[in-house]
Image 1 (spheres, rainbow, N blue to C red):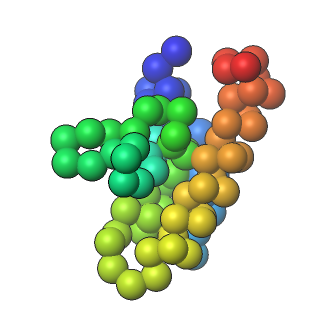
Image 2: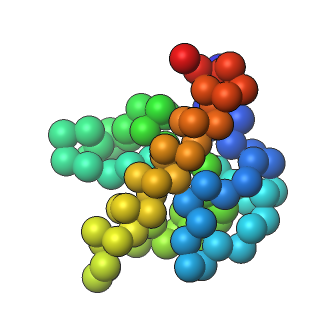
Image 3: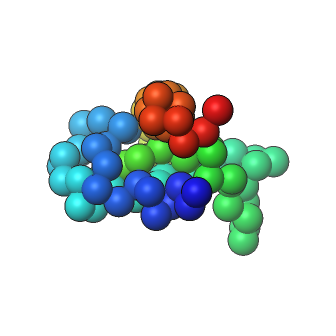
Length: 91
């Protein structure tokens, strides 16, 4: 299953303060952590969350408050993985 393609049309699981709730803009937002991702290296799709375009931009921004945005993304990843398990798409 292509988890990136499966994100389209899904609800935003990040639910940040900028959330637009538009499921047509939902993409898979990947975590960015040293040792997992970096220059030219994207984290595995299992380490991603369904995020609307505004939440994706919000958690991707590298400025102040990065830890709070990472926490939002981690919560979104947990919700996304939980939903995929409920649907039997991953175990």
